[in-house]
Length: 226
Length: 286
Image 1: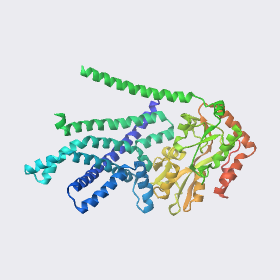
Image 2 (image 1 turned 90 degrees about the horizontal axis):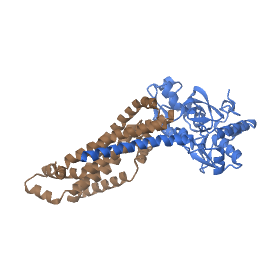
Image 3 (image 1 turned 90 degrees about the vertical axis):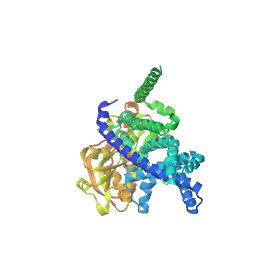
Image 4 (image 1 turned 180 degrees about the horizontal axis):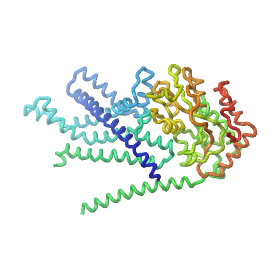
């Protein structure tokens, strides 16, 4: 292995790592928000039988199926190459974040929903019976339990989204994958470039995975007994 | 006791990682040493040649999905002279950044994909005699023509990864902001969407593109040094290289590259390009 080449390439990888991190973070936060909103719509639809909610719920279902059953690569292609034909020009970073949010939102919604549905009905009745208002009921009884149930799935989604960023080079963003390909194309040190790429992803994902385990333990104290 | 098992387990994981990395290094070495000898190619009954699918008129697919273009006319003749028939070939389609890798990983025997000879590339692959001359150019929209590199200040220039244009701008003009794409077709799509002020690539290619796409001009017709384009084989594959060089010299005797020009390039260029500015016969480049 050519260590000198690897040393020279490190700054490029570092800036690419930051870019990957930035897009991932934005994508994860936005998809968490979007996913939570979608899951609340679906959840409330089960309880209130209003026409407006029913329509909104249908829309959310269509969105979830759509986002989970199309590859990110295709979504990015659409955002970057097809939308300009309709007169909407998004920058490459906007495309990446919107694409990740669109994809992640569907997955996050399903995870939140499974968490919410896992909270037993008795908990509502108990909460109401001790005089909690609806908002208090959600804040102190339902949400902590639902989150504890959903957090492993949400964590897996976060890692999934970070890994999915490896296709954003399709919209000409200099992310990790893109830098590796570029170096291979210019200097042909395939082994070194790919080795650094794997290393960077490990560097990014192992701490995230570790933090998620900690978070899981913290949120699921009832089960872990800490 | 638990601590010890855990530590042993961790050491095991580290060892596995190390073995994986070493394994990678050795496989690479093994591939590089393996020759795709002429005898082996003949025994297989076909030769694997890498070409472009999206670089008209040099290597592209026609309406029926057939590989055609200037590179293909020459490559087909090479196959015919090797096997006695034109169809003893497997066309492998690739993107520019993969050309060296495909040879190194033994995925193809020859790269015939408008491959500019450069020093960095010559360290990794063996180039045969050249058949074409080339320099870089910049194409841009008529309403805002880029006539000089200075015009690019504060604007984005589109390039394709793994091309000489990318290396040239990265090394000689780092002040120009580059927008880099993997595929040739994606890069031109981005240019027509107005994502960059211009696109840089081989001037020969850009002239042909601007001729068939209205509203675009090659405002910078020649940039950087005059280079050559040649087929390439895996590093150290001397037998195939010697045969290919002999073949290119023979083709020069019958002015075959001019014939290939007339067949594949003349319809694109018309009278706008002098064939002598582009064609190299018998590998003789002055």
